[in-house]
Image (cartoon, rainbow, N blue to C red; front, side, top):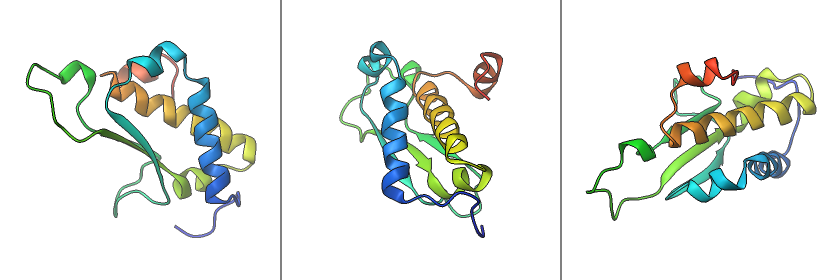
Length: 119
C-alpha cells in the first residue's frame, strides 16, 4: 500500500478506536451483544476496507443463536492512515468507521447509513 501520509503508532491508533467507542451512546453499547472490536494493520488480501463487521447481526439472531463465537468488528489501521492527511482526519475517520461497523451489528446496511449521513 506504500507510504502513509500520517505516521501513527499502533498504540495511538488503538487509543483513537477506544475514544471513538467512548463517543458511542451508552444505551447502544449496552445493547451490543457477543461482539469484540479488534485493530488490524491491514484488511484481508485483495480487500480495500477501512473496517469490517463479521458475524450475525442482532436482527438475524433467532432462537437457535447460542454457543457461538463473538461477532468481530475489525478496524484497519493502514488503510485509514492512507486516506488521511492529518491526525484530526484520522480521528474523524476512525469514529465514522467504528460507528459504521457497530451499525452493521444492529442490522443497519450501508444504504441506510449513507442516508443518515454516515459516509
